[in-house]
Image 1 (spheres, rainbow, N blue to C red):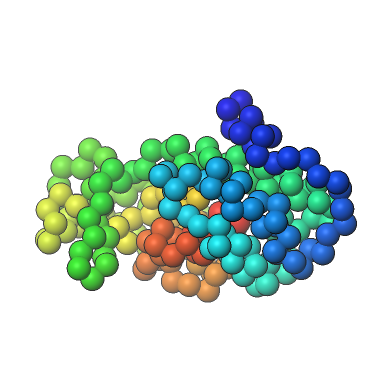
Image 2: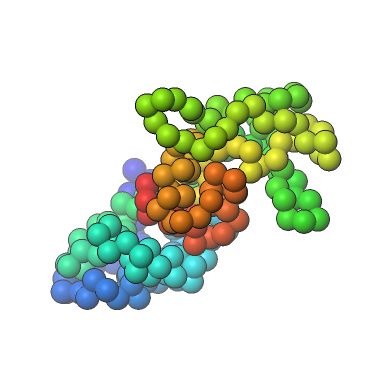
Length: 202
């Protein structure tokens, strides 16, 4: 109910117009910077309006058959955007598997999983089976540099606006983007365009 009220007040009614589905800038006129930052508060999620707009443009340029927010009628675009940001708002309130983070001088991120007491860590989002392909994963060793922490790139917990999770989902979006997210799943969190792309794919 709270999310619906926020979305309804943030998207004022406008005349229904035919739109050019190739113009991603039209999406960002609907979700302007003021609306964007009211829906994606910076104190909760460090995303920018500019990067969101760039990610929409990049996704639609590279995925002609699965374009997002590309309905031919403006009101349909508004409905799609409202639903999408409703999911983003809900996901932003989810509790992360990693409760604390440390970044070393080279930019490598380490996380402290909830209730982790040291030693090898079994990632609950590592799923390997004959029926479903996924990134190779297994017990993650404790960091020798930061005792009590695990190298974040060894884990497949929720990242991005919609908390992309599970090793098989990282493999699938990696194939879509042409990026090795199996070795570097943290790119979904560290590079905003990849984070948004993961959310568009979901």
